[in-house]
Image (cartoon, rainbow, N blue to C red; front, side, top):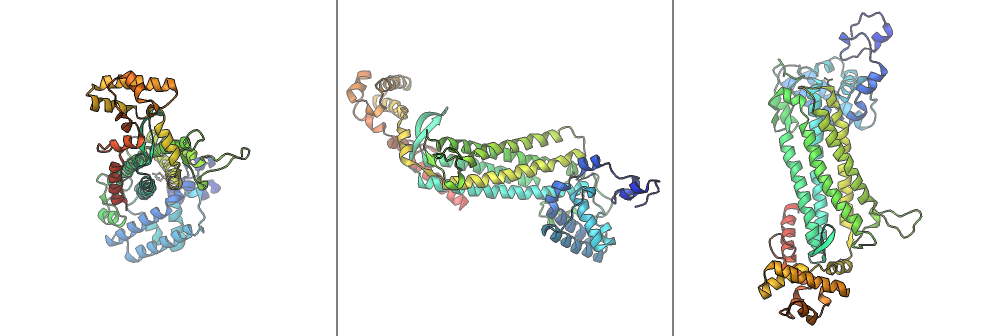
Length: 471
Ligand code: ARG
C-alpha cells in the first residue's frame, strides 16, 4: 500500500487490494452497503476450486512459476479447511469471499499469493463461483424431484384402482383412480426435473478467463480451466461471460414452476386432510397439534410449502428486476443476485424434502374416497355415453335426458344408481336394465381406457414406464 495522504488514520484503513489509488478507507455505511461476505461466504468452496484451477493453468502456461502455483494451491486447501472447520475469521472490511480468501492466502504463503490474481478479475471470478454454486443446486433439485416422484409412484402403485372423485371447478366431475391422480403429479415433477436438466446444459460454460470484461493479454488456456471445473467449454464472449446472470434466472424460473406444482399438491393435501373431505390422513411426522383444540391435527408442512413458494416467485421477480436495466458489462447491482438465489434454493430443497416425506407417509382413506367418488352424480357422463351407445342417441340429446335424470335423483335426494328402472323409463322409455352397469364407479373408471385415461390398466402402464425411468 503506497499512500502519502496527510491523515494517517485513514491511510491505515485504505483497502489492501486497491489501496494504491485510495487515500481513505470507506465510510461505515459504505462498508455496510458494499460488503457481501455475510452471504457470499456460502460460495467459499467454489471460489477455492476456481482459484486452484486458475493457479494450475497459470503454471501450465508458464505465467507463474510452478513452485509459486504449488504454494498457492496448497495454501488454498488450508484456507478451505479453515473455513469448513469454522476456524476462519471473515472480515467485512475485505468485502467479499474472493478477497477474504486471498488475504488469508497471503498470510499463509506470502508473496506468491499476490500472483494468483494474474489474468483474472473478480468479475469472471464471481461469475464462475456462482455458476458452480447454481449448477450444484440444479443437480440437487433434480435429485429432490426424483425422490418425490418415487414417493408418488409408490402411492400410485398401491392405489392404481382405488376410486376417488375427479374434480373440475372443485366440483365432482367424474370418478378417477387414486393412481391416476398421483401419476398426474409424477408427470408434472418429471417436466420440472427436465427443465433443470435443460438449463444445466445451457449454463455449463466457464466464464473464467474473461477477466474484467475484455479478456487478457496473458497466454491463458481457458479450455484447461473449463475442463478442470467440469464445464463443457469456456463462454465464447468475455463481455457476456461477466455480465449475464441468465443461468441464475433459469434456475429461479424453473424453481418457480416447480414450486407452483408443489403448492398445488400442498393445497390438495390441506383440502383432502380436512374433516369435511377425509380423503387422506397425514402422518404425525408431518403434522402438528393445536395448543387449545385437542382434536386438531394440522397439515402445517403442506401449508408452509404453499406459503414458502412465494419467496421463490419473489426471488425470480427480484433478480429479473435487478438485471433488466444494466448496460453491459458488470455492475455492482449484480451482487444482489446471490441472496435471492440462496434463499430460493434453500426453500425449494426444503419444500421438496417435506413434500417427499408427506407424500410417502400419507394414507389414503379408501372407503371415504370411494363413497365420495360415487356421490355428486359422478357417473352422469357414463349414463349419457350409454344412451349414445345403446340407443344411438345424439350426444346432445343424451346430455339432456341425463340432465333430467339427475334432476329427478336430486329431487328424490338419492344418487343415480338408486333410481328404479321405472323411474328412469318415465324420463326415457327405451332405457333398459343394462344401464345400471355403467352407473357404478368401478365400471366407470375401468371403461376409460383411452391413452392417458384413468382406467387402472392404463395407469399401470404409466407406472411401469416411470418405474423404468426412475428405478
Ligand atoms: N462481490 C462482488 C459480487 O458479488 C464480486 C465482484 C466484484 N467486482 C467488482 N468489479 N467490484 O458481484
